[in-house]
Length: 395
Image 1 (cartoon, rainbow, N blue to C red):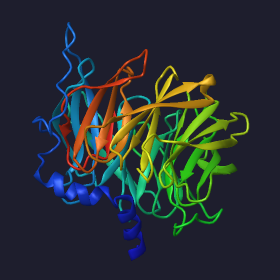
Image 2 (image 1 turned 90 degrees about the vertical axis):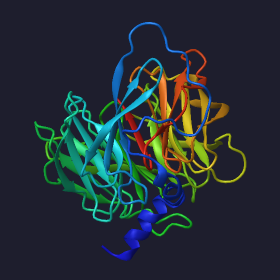
Image 3 (image 1 turned 135 degrees about the vertical axis):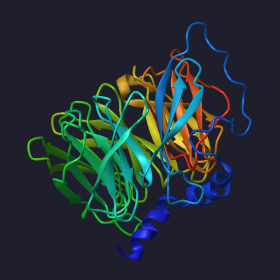
């Protein structure tokens, strides 16, 4: 791989990696339970028994102060308290994580110039087993997802602007790649040196696969041949030049999706046609972070479709939106401090009662209680230390 590929990876880590090197170097491994920098006092525990659930943490193993693999922890689904349990060693730069629908296998994107995807067999006793790594055929894969059928793993190569498909065997292990599709058109947007695939996800109806490309300001729609594991492009949608779309999140209705644009600091509501797979972007909307670029990273939507949250890396905040008109409209409500530095990834717990933020530069994971009625976020306490935290996956 050429030197340009290293530049692509540097672009992905451009602000976060340098900050992480300064802070994470003094942090313990993911298993540490010492609190991070002070923040609001922890919420009072609810009465009744505490319930520990698994939490997996992504990092950059090649970054200064980074981890040594996938961090493992548990969290109390009532209080949000995190307890470190160890590390799945030997997984290189696991910057994004996804779990199989069965819950028995975890997958990691190995964000390196020679990109790969790794399968990890999960065990209740914590003795997780690495099943192997397969090449994605591209540079710096930064996102992956499992097709709802559980038979295919989809990944996005940021550096080379391509998307890949791998078969998933009965054991959860990955087979050789069945497809690799490059985003060759339309041409790159202003300030971009080429396509940069940032996400690949299946629509809620399962009929289409959508890939977000930051470099081309485009969202591509594909059909996946579930017998052969090959992608066929059926349409694409472009946003305004230079927007830099990063992450797409569907409303539970499956009729609308919300697009976070990293470069121009906006969100876009998109209408989605499940029949054709066509995506129709609306007008850009503000993130609530004021002038300048705050590098919005990711949107999540509550299970009832009533609220949406956006992570703002430069602003170090979470924006709360009310979802209205059956998903067709986002109304900006407020922003709250994330309690860390550079929130790269956010995720809701399966119960919907907690929101997790992985803060790359501070090397922490912060947790918030989600008010089901108002959508308000309330800090669950001090952040949990995790080296160069770039992904938090609560199960």
